[in-house]
Image (cartoon, rainbow, N blue to C red; front, side, top):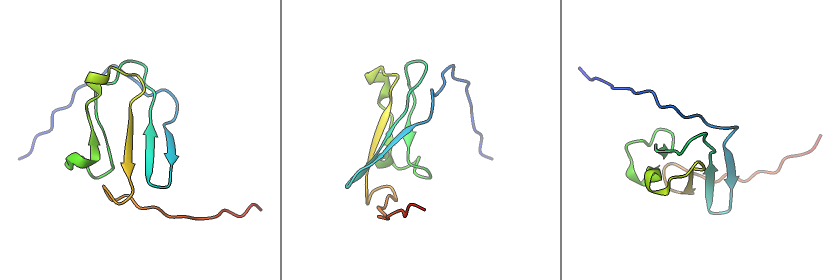
Length: 85
């Protein structure tokens, strides 16, 4: 039988994450109420060390961020043009 341990962390995300889609990568920026000491990872890729950023304890930041290159961690680029109606 597998067991999962959970803990409560006294911190909150402030507002919505900022996402930047560039030619070669996507950038994710988050703002937190207190210094962030966790990890950010691509959905479904928590066990892939190439898809995780978890060195925030050294950064001591309330603005954690992560950059993912297209072609890694299941990331793809899809170009589209929206038509104004």
